[in-house]
Length: 632
Image (cartoon, rainbow, N blue to C red; front, top):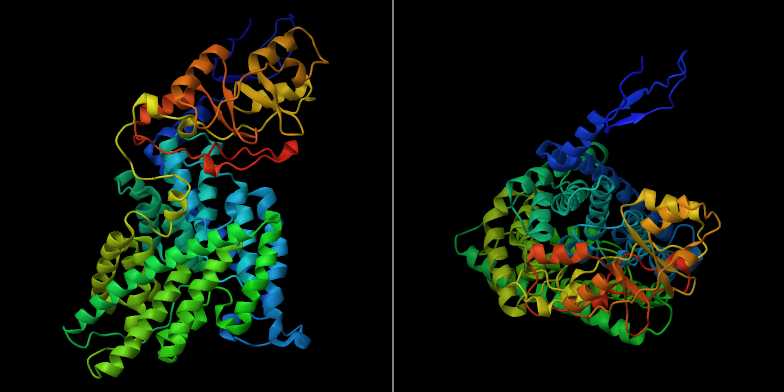
């Protein structure tokens, strides 16, 4: 007697023969696995489990990144942290003396420049704007390779003397990890964004030993959302990462600080004045950063992969004059907090850090701007304390208190994230006695920063300059929306000579029903649908290639109205590529699904600008066709 045939959710194995010849279907049930996968995708408990996994990954990534930075610094400078011994020669290169600092950024640039250009161009710069853009405009989608490329490139840049910080890279590393996990199990976009934020929180938490600040950094800057579901997932990721970080790196504060106290109630006026001054310095830092980047863009005419090495000569010259600018610079910051520098030298270090960080980013370096903003704020606060001690002796407290307040206030003025600034300064130092002066200065710094620089911060300015706005606006009319608002990154294209088995394997591995065919010159040869591949397989056309199955379709423009694009989609009956009208290079992909997503979201502001400046020209070789941008 034949056994029942397997249910749809079961996977049949090869049927063994029965004595009577009747086949028997032996089933391996997958219903339980399907339930687990569905629970992870849609259930609250599944999201929390994923947040813990992402937090653990971010914690391990943070530890690995710290090790990479230390190793690179030791290789390039011969010291664990060259800022602690500024001007010392390289132990293995004594003949060069202190001149080795001119060559270190060049050598590092020759390594990370081609790496970034070839594998993940979004790893260039300070990283946080790219994560903010991915969350706000790409549903949280970040390529997994970004985590590896960003870690290696930033470690080489910082170790080679780049005057940038660790927070930008670790945010991008953790976010890429969270995005990769979410994409692998096909989470909906709302949950994918949460995992991206959880990865960012975990990275900050582990690398700085600041779990609370990591949570607020992710919620305030990355998500802009304090909902209960968001809070729970981000907290679990931050705690998990912090446990791993503390187990490996130790549970020690950021700086070893003397006890602080407020001398008198009148001193709060001094902290308020420092907060207002810090706002101007924070805004100035942001503007100089992008002004230098613009200048480097105008002057550079060579290949992008060579830019960090050539620009490294300028950075090396600055390091030769002021070796205190080498790397992150925490030892120098500690000296300033202890009040060991004179007023004039504090001002020199402040200006030099702004220039060194701007130059590192401008030449194509990879690293964060959070640590530099703390450095600048520390120098400002210590200089302010020196002036007050001279003008009003006996009224002001210790120099370290003003340096600490200056650190938080400059960051708040530059990033306009007051909650994060207060919490992170408290956690970085472990000093609760300074919390009230911090709150006063940071609140005033954030408020004045908004008055001075409108809606731009050191993180959003990079996006605004590209025509991208993250703030929600009134719903746009249908006739105002463009293709650039809706299209998504181009799927990995098919080669024209791909055989039928390879085509069948591609469609079996991914959810796409239509894929573009692109030749080695980057030119579109048409599109192939899964239905056409299935029909060719049934016909037994084994010698058929992608170029023979490809249908010619029109390419859309990023500035084309969605109303026109929809008409083209209806006529072609399939998804369509988006091409740059000037170069003809493919920059994106549009289907009915993307248009419905924009209409359902209803969050695009009227007259929303095109994101076309995010697009990059295509490479002449097929494997390098850009699949990570969409006209923006």
